[in-house]
Amino acid sequence: MEIWVLGALGRTGRAVTAELERRDVPVVLVGRTRDRLAATGSKYVVADGADAIAAEIRRQRPAVVINTIGEYAATAPAIARAGLPGGHYLDLAADLVAIPRLLDLHEEAQAGGSTFLTGVGFGVLATEAVVVKLCEGRPTPATVRVDALASVAVEEGAVGVSLAASIVDALVSAEPGAAPRTIALPDGESVTAAGASSGELLAARRASGTPDVTVYSGLAPVSPLVRALVPLLGRLVAIPVVRRFAVRRLAAVRTKPAPRPRTHSWGHAVVTWPDGTTREGWLCAGEAMDFTAAVVAETAVRLARGEGKPGAYTPGAAFGAGLAEAAGGTFLL
Image (cartoon, rainbow, N blue to C red; front, top):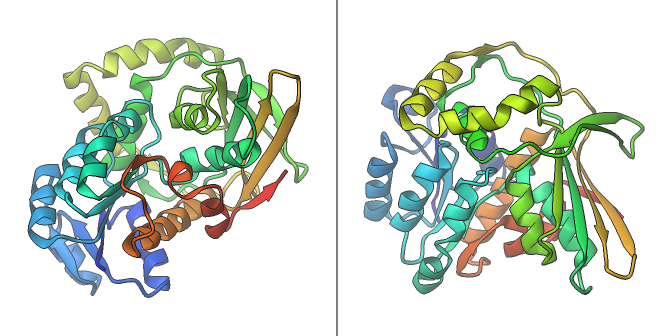
């Protein structure tokens, strides 16, 4: 029942590994640097790049592979397919390039008896779970609005290739969203969020059945100038040579440590039906990265126990709204 963590020495990989070890689950760390991996005292595999990782997966056949290395649009299909038949895969993609690319492997995963999951983390699940909860047992709504309001602590050090690539890839599919608005939170705090085009959009559409979904994100830029430049930046970084340059420069940027800006992270949804009925709900979680690590660990353990269904899904579609509660979230409906 080995679970492999790709990118195990990065911030997300370390957090996920700690969660799995807390549950006494056998973990194999996968990375590029033998000395650093050996220093952890854990079982490890040295592999540099998606092709090398895929080759090791085919050779050693882990039960579950957790991909935290980023660049999911490029790395996910090859790594996920390497586990066929029978091996399970999950990643933390949150953009509208990578998520559809993995979901397109649904029939391959079904035929191979494997479960492929994407968007496993606060991004996607925090809002998807609320939409699933509100729409349970009800007809298709007319409109859905979701608010993804993460509160994230900043770790000192370089941004790193994984996060840098994810940020750049998110720009490729970004479009100007709705104007910024201030959202009052159930705990008395507030946050300014702006319209965004992200993985939450696709997950909410699939969970509700309606195409009329609006997404606001607390991480989206609210400056008018930056918002106006986003589509141009997206077109530029879609050019391969520009993308490589942007990832390299952003990865080298060093951040200063900072506490999370708010006490809680929130996923929020407002669902309206054709007859005018409206339902609203919140998911309350702690620091968003801690919640993400808990979601990933809980999901991986369920897959290792054989509880997944063959195919490619977002996390709420695979395991329902209860997955968010199992990871420490609380619903307020």
